[in-house]
Image (cartoon, rainbow, N blue to C red):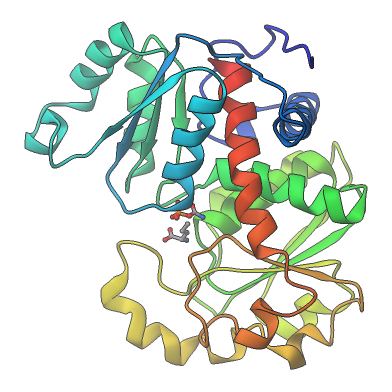
Length: 313
Ligand code: CP
Ligand code: NVA
């Protein structure tokens, strides 16, 4: 069975940026090995007897199910902690929550709004904290995405990924991910909706190590020209529902439809972290078409999350 070493044991998984090129490679390898074990029906109880607490301040289908099922398949147990039910929702501080949960659990996953809450939780928790999405970053998504791209393209280094749409948490984490694996990432967003400036600057500084080229443009056609991977996400993320209607007008040129896809390489694949607003950022033809790998991508969240937990917890 694939041997998991202790090199990342005890580490928080808050941002892709916190992990070196080699460490990201190791997590991806663990993901694909764990996937093989599961597909072959081989028991892989790397986390026997361990418990993960999952705090969700926002909705989730994929992330919740992947962590919960993943923990079960690894021989452990996962607890869903809704803010409606735990004292965090009544004003208990993140610090006190971390100090308590760290004494009972072996790992904590949190999905929330303010990224600083995850940083604070990680600061005070005695056990690893996994970022299950914040307004700023979505790092576990990117591990599943990189696995998916690698499965289709063989190598990540030297590929070109074009992200078309809102410069959101997924776009930010893709910049960090691209920099680490040597994949060019171009983000095409309307003015005012670019990815986080600080994230871009840090990722660009980092990209030198692997030779990845990272850029932000406004023209979606320019972005997808010659791309190996087209990626999109909703125009209004969770927490921005009130901006959805206004944004739809500003994002019309950023729809991934057959015409835009035809400008990429003929063998380009299409990713979307999901959930999608069909007919808005992506059309049915593309999402259900032969170049779409969005459901494999969703499945890979399971294998990616298992890898993240198995190496850190
Ligand atoms: N992609 C993703 O994180 O999906 P959920 O919001 O359903 O977890
Ligand atoms: N950008 C989206 C991703 C959902 C998985 C959001 O934050 O709602």
